[in-house]
Image (cartoon, rainbow, N blue to C red; front, side):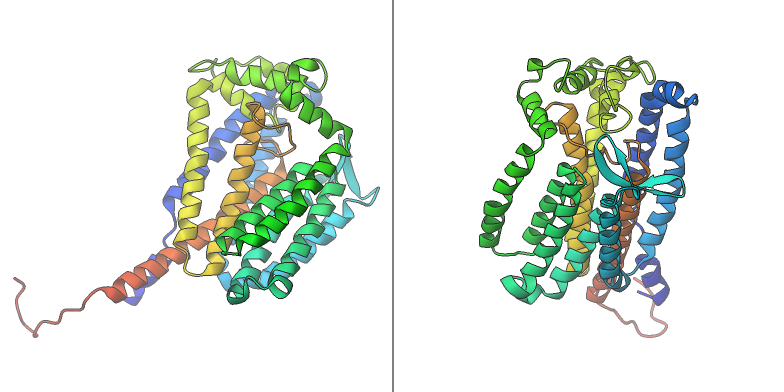
Length: 393
């Protein structure tokens, strides 16, 4: 292969992944418009308030995705520690009264230039980047409990504690899950997972039962009819909205549950609008797109040119898709209510920008892998020489 062909191969982008992301973002924007239209009119006097904000964040996120797709693996490795330190500082600032912006009893947001920013969204990427760099660099000593496994475990515990202090148990649990999956992909010995479970499961139970609202959510999950106007109200209304659309739905914009029956329907419960207005067909399409995203992401991880890219692709894919399926499961009544948004659907600038930025990094990994695969295939191809002037058969 000529040098120009090799460079072209290395610049090749995973078009399938891009199409999936565009479809999810476009559908999500349409669903958000329908979900937030009347709420924005009542609250701000502008029915397009949330749509405009989300469109702005999509533009910012797209720019971040393009930048992320152009970052080389070595650059990403060098950024892992500074980005992790920045995330830690921002997380600590949320615990300072007057600096953070409390919403519904949680201190997850910082007010920056008149707009709120949620540092835990940055943590999701910074932690995956750090773990990928750390475990790939020390792969041969990956089962050294003190020198290899203890440092990332301490880092994860620190961030989990900071997020828990923000009153955000679901994101803390997500970080632990993503960490466990990256450790599994890195082939860490099974006994360490057993030790992690023996510590984390009892701790998670304590975390749940030390907050009244979490206990209420667990009770509402198992028996929402026991308090249909209190803790079980949101669960019941979201489930009713999800199933009320039948096969084809009531039509985009025609749903009625969003008018006040389902609290936070433009945010954590936006998937209920999909079920009511697009029906079972719409639900299946959205689920299929997230499954396709997961399949594509893990395929990219499997074809990565080195361990760092593989671990990073796996962590990014897991972080995005686990959030998606967890959110959908909550709306369907299969999990207790959490504060995890639906990626590319729920209203929220921090989540949208960071999701697209991570997707951009995933595209960059795919492009590097494609270039390596093309070069390897070319190297394996036999070269046939013909005498000068010989004719083709």
